[in-house]
Length: 101
Image: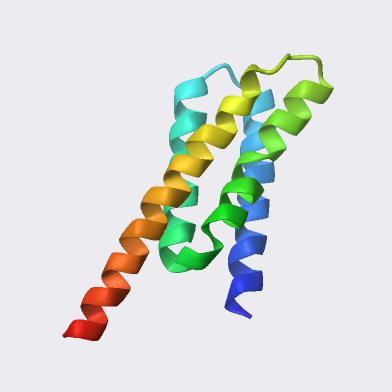
């Protein structure tokens, strides 16, 4: 059940970020939010990191490429992927240290 909730949160966040990206030129904030959302959700469920990265990062390139923006928005997947990898590493580390204590 937790997996479904985390994935749903990731997908909703991805859609919200895609909508925000369409209405602003502030790419740095969107990129930071992509990284942060993927990091937090992947820290909660480290094994779902690849799916979280896709759910958070994929809506932006899909909407932008359909709108004729070219291939540059695929960078959103890089930021979401980086956040997911960092979050999964952190989440795994926290879980291991909690078991050892």
